[in-house]
Amino acid sequence: QAYRYRHSGYQDEESMRRQAAANYIQSGHYREAMNVLQSLSQRNGQWYYLSSMANMGLGNNVNALNDIKQAIRLEPDNVQYQMTSRG
Figure 1 (cartoon, rainbow, N blue to C red):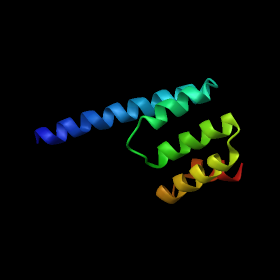
Figure 2: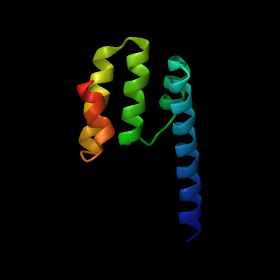
Figure 3: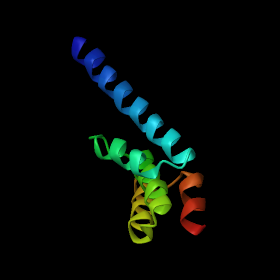
């Protein structure tokens, strides 16, 4: 049980840092967002979505497209990801 608490603390840290990356993206600080994302070990659909947004902001369109495709592969039911890929 103690392991689960430690693990959830780790998850909280990762999700807080993903939120920080999202805040950077919203304020146009794409390089900072990429730095935060690169420091995360948990690469889920949200990670790839944020990476796609940051790459798009930096003009890395190929990486952005690859990342949003990976986000959709990981979370095929997420409508936000699908809309982004069409945009």
